[in-house]
Length: 518
Image (cartoon, rainbow, N blue to C red; front, side, top):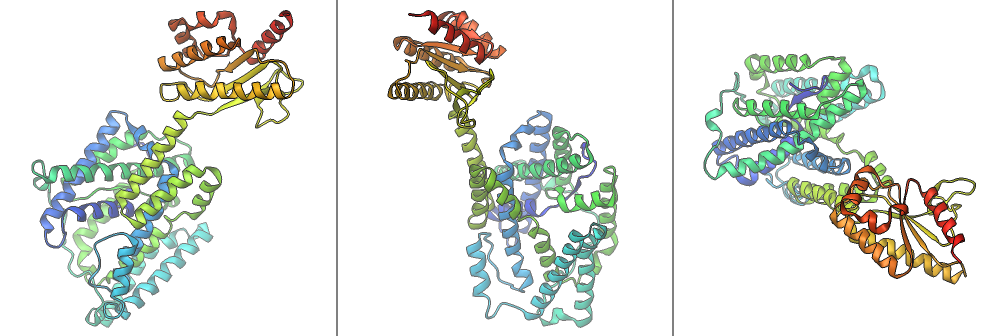
């Protein structure tokens, strides 16, 4: 149903960790296994409803509030949290904390060091982790060997399972998977909560997980669409993911989304259509029907090693360095998400990331940039005097450019900042013995829209300037802005002859008028 040709669907580390931690906050999976499963299916159902609804209503833009920087920080923090959670398997610890923050996890690891670690498990875990990382390194160094990291996990599972079976290491304290139920997933329609206290909890978990799943899937889809030069329809992807998760919730599945590692293998293997997902599903089905008993002696340590090797790549330190160089506010969002996940929880990290992203938007909307313009010598071009120091000021004229739409949220700031520029230039002209400021030109080409508060702000500015015997002039207002100036009749107050097509035209008018006046 989706438009991506390359995305591979399945359970992914970040969403799995997220839904796992959110579920454990509500229900104990050991003491209340049935309620835990039912809540998981309920959350998956509502995640699907959320995703499909966003697609049908064409509200895909909502996921854009999770900025790239926030996602980088969130993914990095989630990767570290996931990796730390796997220490219980790699070290063979039986009693481990249910909390996900780094302090609780490390305390649990060190307090069990004297009696809870199993050296045979550690040998298996570290050996195969080294093998998996080496396979990744080989695949990264030489693209011809892209298949090496792809087959390394299943190779590790087979070798580790054979080793434990032959040596009977499970008798020495090595924890194994044991029995895995064979067969196709049973129907779970009757297990979804539609009434009772768990509905609200399932809805909350589902919505949060849905947004993260959507963000990851759309980001992955866009990445590969760009590589193959085709367009991705985000709303179609949402409807497809939502329909899939609704169906999954009714067949004993939890939330699935696009997997970057599987998608990368798909891409490198040369897949051209989503049929690759059908083949992948058929192999999983075959495994469920036939092969599951063979995994009885698979050590938990190898599964932990596979997860650790998979999530290490989510810590994108190069992207963090680039974010720091490009935008400090984005870096704060990135680090806020990272430390929120690592030191608190996934939900807190997500909340911090979204909050900082919103704060950045609000800051940019309420405090738009206003700059002074000057003339580039020998031209009729007017540019920012900070960016072009050679741009010269026009005697008796102050030119200000507003780099934003003027709305209720920033209209007062724009007016006050413009008057501050004017006051500073007046004081500067007086100190240097230059002619009095008689004209204020506002360059309005970046002002894409204006509301009633913006109109009132311009009217107040006009009245303030009139008292100071300074003429307000507008340069190049757009069609939408001009319509609203006409509707409000502000153009009559300012004077239609004081609205110009370009800054150069406005400056020529001011210069002629200054010469004509005695």
